[in-house]
Each structure stands twice: as C-alpha cells, then as structure tokens.
Image (cartoon, helix red, strand yellow):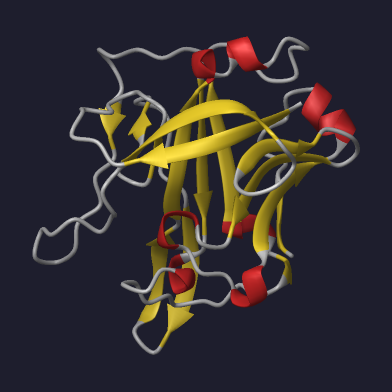
Amino acid sequence: MTIKIKLQTTEANLFCSSKWWGDPDLPADMEYPTVEVTDEDGTYDYPLTFVCQIDCEDLAALDPEGLLPHSGMFYVFAGLDEYLEQFDSPFHNGPGPWPKKMVVVKYTKAINFETFNSAILVDDEDQPLTQPALKMTFEPGEEEGTCLLADATDPVTFLRIASGTAGLQFPDGLSLCLRYSAADWAAGKWKLVKGSLE
C-alpha cells in the first residue's frame, strides 16, 4: 500500500492541517529540532528544515491495514537547506546515509487546536525563514515519486521525497528516503528514523 502525496498552493489557513513547508504547529512540550554547528563564528544551534506535518486522520481511509496511526500528527525535519536554491547551509549531506541527527521525525498522539502553537522561524530582520506552506492531500499510488510507505517490508520506507518536489533539487535525480527497521516501525519508535539520499 503506497500513499501518493500531492501538493498544491492555497490561501487557506493550514494550522494543524497536513502541509508541506510553512511552520510546524507543535504541542507546547515539543521542541523544534536543531543541530550543533561549529564554524568560524563559534558554536551554535542551527534549526533543521521543517519539511511537513501530516494529520494522520487524512491517511485513515487509505490505510485499511492499519500500518500507520489514524490519529495524531507526524512532523518531519531534515538538514536539506543546501538543496533549496534560496538557502545556504552550514553543513553538507550528500548521497548515501545521512548522520543520525540530520533527519528527525516527531509524533504526537492527539491534535489540540487550543494548545498547539506555530513555531515561526525568522531572521535578524524578522523575515520568515520558511517557504510558503503547501496543502498536502493523499491518494492511492504507485511506488514512485514523493509518497508514504513506498516499501512496507524491512526496512519500512516511511517517506520518500523525490527530486523536484516543492523546489527541492537533489543531485542526479536522487530521492531522500526515511526508513525504519520493521521492528521499530511495529513498535511505533518514530524517533529511530534513518535518512538516506539515494
């Protein structure tokens, strides 16, 4: 069962909805993931790029086998600024497996419009550091392009992001794949994701 991801521009408010880019809408106790960077300016925490958030209720009808949670929200972050033309990056993540902290998946079991807040990143001039949010919709699909569950064996490919998706340009047409061992997937150990550009 593969779930195809479709993206579209919208003027709608996507707070606590499935969206690509934009700002994540996080529970109060969930921290925005960062990576420690050391360069000529010293040591500092650099925020990972917010890729998407997925309202699991949107997936329920497409997941009769119950491979995914049918409530709550997934959040995906990754160190992929270098593959977006308008951003510079203090680190490089090339083809092959990425370092552990360069891909982060978070999950919350319930969505609460009253207590969730948008984590808005701005630069020194208070200008947004994120790209405009795109509405995400889902439909049954083939094991190609940008999709969820491109492979449900072992390891499980939770998310595959194809080159060309929403302005991302990976080298040689590669895709960023987020995977879990079958055991970690079955146990819902969402933090134990592994990223690979291949």
